[in-house]
Length: 306
Length: 306
Image 1 (cartoon, chains in turn cyan, red):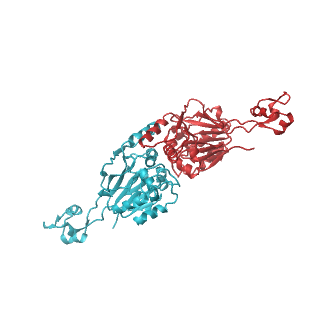
Image 2 (cartoon, rainbow over the protein chains, first blue to last red):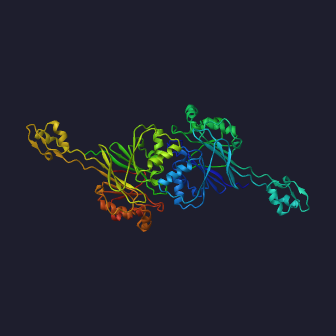
Image 3 (spheres, rainbow over the protein chains, first blue to last red):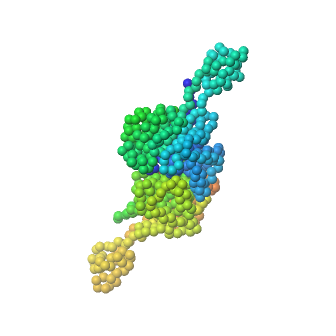
């Protein structure tokens, strides 16, 4: 069955200090012709170009929190979009003072942003449906970090039911009833008899769901909206042997990330946001896999299809 | 004759839009055990790490102007230096509002910069000796750009004269007179006779000089301090066939850069700050070489010894 594209490209995998040629956090999401950038660490625009992504078409930018390693790539990217003559409105979803930060920067550097920016503000008290269109919806979820931080759940909208051609003929259903069928409603045949929807349609594939959690301490309770994700990205800054550092800095270990994937009943886990103390990442992967076998390391340039 | 290190490493060669994997402007200068960063476009800290430069030891940062492609790497670099536990004062030489820009950013992202920063402000009315220590001095020079912009002249301090050992013996000069000799003064021998300095010493190698000019329109008049540079870096954003673009944006063509090198009587020219319209850079090089043969293209990672 045809599935429209829903694909994440990893742009950055480092935590605060970008060591071992790893860039700070950023991801580019393609969902059925729309493009969502998630976080924008320094160098995001170079990574977008390096991996030949259609970043000029970005519709929405999601910012989890205002620590530098998640936003210092934003001024350069927004300036470049302007130099590239972007006209379309850009939606930026983020904690409150981002607009003021950017405007201060643009004012003093005399940068002119020629396209409109709509800022949508997150809160981090409870999950909130914060953006939706015909194709997808975005829910912010509270994370536990040193400052106001949210994760994001990106879900496809529910698909229409699929009409079974042969049954339409058999029950003689008129064309003008089809839109009701697609929405799951019962319809009338040519003679005015009510025909049950389930006789005429098949269930569509369920909407796919991507959950993004960076940066956060281990989450004891998970909002229901995160359950059964097709893909969970969860930060894993530290190994369990450095769990004290994780506690102090309000980050997660690979074990925390894997346990969260298990608690969420996720299908797949990607870990990232690696501390600069680890040159080699396999120990993080091995630690997570012991709890949640379907784990992969986030690697820059890597694409993950949902 | 031994010459202490004086070496530039190119970190970024792009103009405003970082195309073709070229990073925006930044250079790292090693001068006799001191380290000077010149401009800090986005990604500077990644480039410093990539080329394994001792950036934690940076003494001075020079900022030519506040356009984003020259400063958007600064917040990340300064934050990382703090995370790396820098204690030593950092000197930042730049146009006025940089301190306010950075403080706004650090306040909202809750970054703590744990080392002291001393800001020294440039003006762009006339050349000004803006920093010096025992080894080198830095002079800011006005450039012609859309906002307050300066170039920089980094020069070694004059070296001491070299004492000729044999002559010291011949003229029986006592040891306590040596420091006068090194400074070029005449001295007395054992018997109180005045001996001319030039009989006892050789001239040292002249101080080396690096001139940095980015970003600027063609400079009709050049301050004397720039004359006879060992190395001139001059932006060459455009080819002469796009000189109208250069005029509008107040940038230089390769021809402008080469003509300036000629006017300065520089020994060598490096061009950079390439427009994103040029994938291939040889036409820029060829254009410059027709006027100033000893021209090279700035290439990221390249080291140039003076």
